[in-house]
Length: 371
Image (cartoon, rainbow, N blue to C red):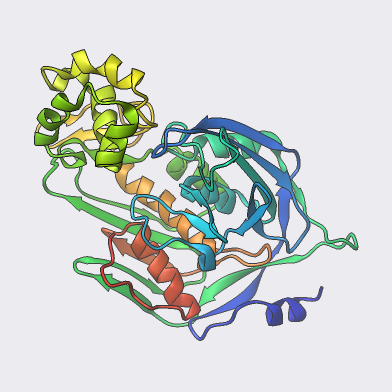
């Protein structure tokens, strides 16, 4: 297909234009297969990344269902992760995988994913160490090759270039972008309640696979211990210890998973927790959270599972998430990450997605946007 024909087949917007990158679309040279545990579900899943033809783009196969990695398929009410859904089936926590694929130049691929229960209608991508490093290493081991179409022809890779300034705002959180000849990302976060994090900034004047692999991809997800769950829930959970797993999960739902994460990760922080850990594990209430899947900061005690990989690792992880979420702008094997100077402050998955929807003209803001 000619470049002119490719332009006509892509979504257009007054805010950005598709332009040639001077590169050819690529795919993985060899199959990638990884198995791991989901952060939120705690379920084991296996991901296979297979090569695809030029202009196929990136898409998930869950059972017999095809879920494209597109902003059209994003689930709006998942502020703690990015989820994609189609026809009643969903794939959750896709941001780290998509971030690595976008940054490492895997433009086209088939992503097969399955869990331990074939009857489930939802599956979660493994979290590994809370960063994208496992995926970056796997892509590097596989290598890349030029993607060709069914006629054996390669295809020019296009990128979305911003035409005019654009922003989205929610309270004191915002994402703004201005036209710029290359990808530049500046990100800021502020956690005054946790001095060990405080106000941080990270900026990259350019973004390529090397910078991503060394400076962004290895940064891990983080949380503040005291905000993960109010302390009174610790005493609330104790009387429930003899309830069966089904009853307990039914009564408090997601809270159970959060409490279990705290119990498992920091048993010494509560007098009875160390006694309860094994019991909770026997009930199946400890999901995918642990000191190996995130860095945890206490408001008063600082980092509880050091060392950090970078002084501003939390801020760098926000950039990792942004790249994954912005990759959902990609179409037909072209670049998803906007070519512009992107400035974000106190953003999150919901705000990232809102910005991408704004770019494509679907900027209906949800009633309460959660960063």
